[in-house]
Length: 616
Image (cartoon, rainbow, N blue to C red):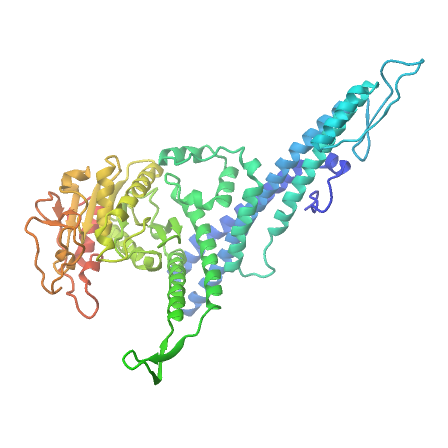
């Protein structure tokens, strides 16, 4: 980079005098423009070329072309992010060195005012001055700048007693020059390696390792650019969606790009920001997180322990010939392997939505993603900022990142059916897996703590959707299984949550006794449970499924209370109900097939009618 040193030697006076911070700012603008072009190219490929191909081509030719386009899109995405980091780094260097340059310029100006000479090594020569002795003024001399506080104090004390008053002035100027050169050197040493690190491998494939490097580069630039970024207005701490939106609107386009590049996690989860902005940030988080997970898997695969060992008969204490069983160590290793692979599979399932959608009404928006704990994902099918109707689906027990594909599919099915039910108005359908869902029926699902932790985030998300929309949106909250408890607690404890309609299917209770407790008109609260859904056997406060033969479909309690409050499908609850198919009875395909059949047939049709403002 022209003008930027390598950090291998101190910045000299000549270099700093000639250095122009504005040239680095201009270079930053150039990289920013290049990043914007890469972003535009990526969007054009993803949203026009690839979509057009999927709508007009079929077969192997389409498959091959799509893979090439996906790779090209990843390349442009990588270019966009790296250019943004380079731009921020250059602006950060320009800011740091400009501070030193201004200090130097001010010191040189003072030297000129006193008619001192600044030498090439930064020392300051001064003329004879002061009270004459024997007809001769004290001789002039040369002051060498120091930056060490102790040495500076000694020099200043010596200058106080020097008969030539110019010495004290010259020493102060020389010290200022030394400080300026030291600060410039520190800026150079800080930024030179950061910029050298911002380069890609010499190939045309953006790999998971590349995205891991991006994450590392982001951390390095973010730390180095702290002083520069501190000039920007910080986002509100624990801000409301409205406060977040106001902060974002107050940033320039350059500042927004820098925050997305340096703080994609923060921007991606900031409720109240536009869906397109959050999705852009979260797609970067997705790429980086997936790259890290792939690296973890690769490392873990290298640690595979001995797989089999002879079987020891517990009855005789002897080994059986030709009988091998997995070792306990291998079982633990394999469980970890499956856990990591599951997270990768979940992230790949999200990416497939971006790689396969066929129209703007089904364009995906990634509104949240991380692989912490059980993993979280918020995916909208359609743009919630512009849709007339928004349905937010909260999944229940067993939901996690590794199985997110099925939950996204449910959101997609509801969106498709809603467009059929009301083609005159647009509908966005959101999967909200923004919480740690329980992972066992007996035990975790009978505990309200998972819903307790989810109600605030869900309220903020729904409020954020309403804030970003800019106008009234018909909002429907859909809770399935334990997700209906999350929905119920959120509506119960946040009276102002912007929800117009609520749907509970296969519900173990919504945390309330009556529909009136949900803070919406009771005729806007809808519930349904299939006849063959084993949720019907849920006893109060004792966990799901009574200890009976699961084929006995009988209501256990006459007061209509179940695990988490009044059954929302009963008259006692006071809401509305809609008809659904009986569903499959338990059999070879599992104990609760009916519990998962609400996204098909007349059940799906009726939910779509509610979402679009109708009545089933």
